[in-house]
Image (tube, rainbow, N blue to C red; front, side):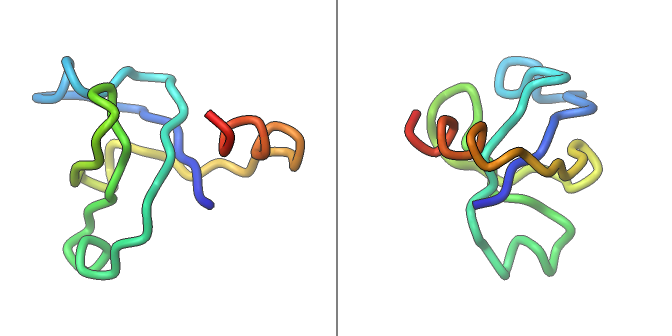
Length: 69
């Protein structure tokens, strides 16, 4: 499971919070369009530009906690 941190939310202020960690869902079609499928503040998954996020590596214990929520 991949996680990213939001670094920009222009045009998506209600859906994304800057400096917040988000889960990325696999989507090869989105990747080919420089987009990521993110579970956003609504709890649903939507496509957002790659440029709005930075990938992060989490410790195993933290990743397990986030996967449970």
